[in-house]
Length: 196
Image 1 (cartoon, rainbow, N blue to C red):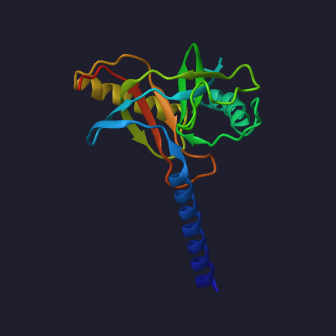
Image 2 (cartoon, rainbow, N blue to C red):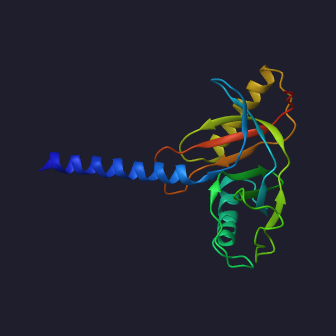
Image 3 (spheres, rainbow, N blue to C red):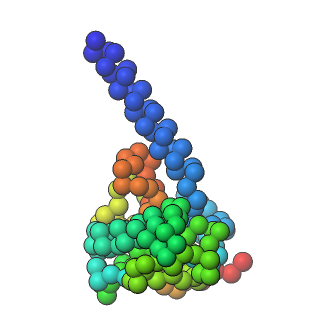
C-alpha cells in the first residue's frame, strides 16, 4: 500500500511539472537577441517593447511586488477601456531603488502604444522601452531582496573584471507565476555600453 502511495505521488508530481512546463512554453516572452553567452553571464540586445508600468514608493522587492502586480493584472484581465483580455507575457520587470520602484508588464508584441487598450487605472503608464544592450545573470527559486542583491553584486563584479562599462541601474526579471514551484527562472539585467 505504501509503495502504491509513493508511486501515485511521484506520478502526480510528474504531471504537475509537465503542466507547468507546457504553460511556460506557451507564454510569449520579451524579444531579444543573444550577443554573447558564457558560464558567468549573457550579453543581450533588447529592441524597444511596449510596457505597462506602475510606480511605487516601495524600496524593496516585496513592497513593489505587493503594490504593483494586482493593478497590472487587473489591467490585462479587462480593466481597460475596451474590457479586453490581454495575454500575460514574461518576464515581469522590476526596477527597485532607495528612491522608489516600478513594475512593468511587457505587452504582447502585437500591441503598440496606439492599438493597446487604454487602462482604466490612471496610475498605469503605457510607454516604449528604450533599445539597449544588457548583461544578464540568472538564478532559480523564489526571489527575495537578499538574492537580488547577491546576484546584482556578482554581475557588477564580473563586469568590472571584464572592463565592461555599466550605463544604468539593474532590473529584476521574474518569469514564473507564484504557484510554480519547480523550474523557476529569475534574472538580473544591467544596461551596458556595447559595440557590435
